Length: 351
Image 1 (spheres, rainbow, N blue to C red):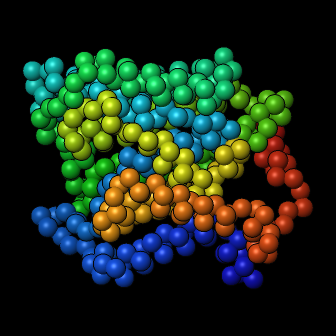
Image 2: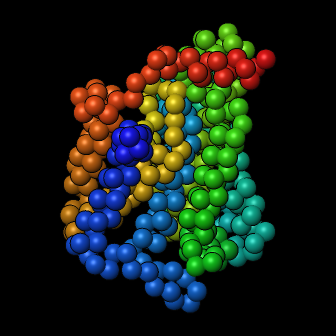
Image 3: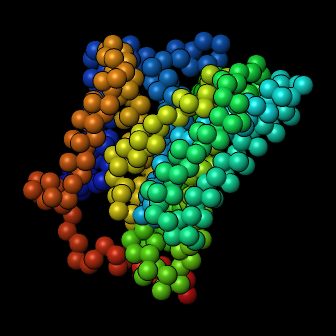
């Protein structure tokens, strides 16, 4: 009985896929799980995966919140590029690029601009009522143009030790980039699962009209999640630009929105909105990053990487499909419609 409940859990197959990837890497490369300590820092393939997944983790987290409200954000890659362009352009123009104060202001400016861009998406979707895919597609193309204007069409490079710390720094042996992503994920998870916000987001995603009639301020919630998505993409942009110490408007965050959506889907969140899983998104990100690392190690050309990602995603999504699970006898029976509990909880919160 317990084993059956475990198999029915939405995270079972994603976790199985991640374990299989780790096992295959360990068999082909016995040193895969080895971790060494040098100068107080941890080194190893698993540490590299955690470090390299931090940018996608932040973007996918914002994407999870947006998708939960029955939306989509295709502009996260462009917003990521804008964050790097704003921050590095400010540092380059500063007489003291190595100053902690300069870096703090640069980061604050980059995050503020991306918060505004995310809020703009939210305004178009929640107030103007433009379809999310269209509203964010506009910024997807315009955003890189904005980044190009900021950098004047050049790849802006700087030398700033404090700024480089975001990507190369180490605290307690762990990469600073990973710790930033972990803290943000934990903070967001705590807010959406320990307050009514998560329930309200699910209610809006399941049935926006019913949630409005129940007293939920759906417009404000939708506006907020897009703003948060922009802010998280901005954080990812800071990590990306600090890794290469350059602002590349053309290539920064290129196609990261696709990986973010894949991570969310692998984690069990429905693109139709409603129920979402932050833990599932974290597992999805780790699967994608581990798969990318594995393909690189095997010497497979980068152009073929999407094929392998597609195969893994298709297999996992099939195992999560309601019809496939029903055929395998793994589908969980429900005596009431899925919309009921969410709306009942919403009504209770709004009383």
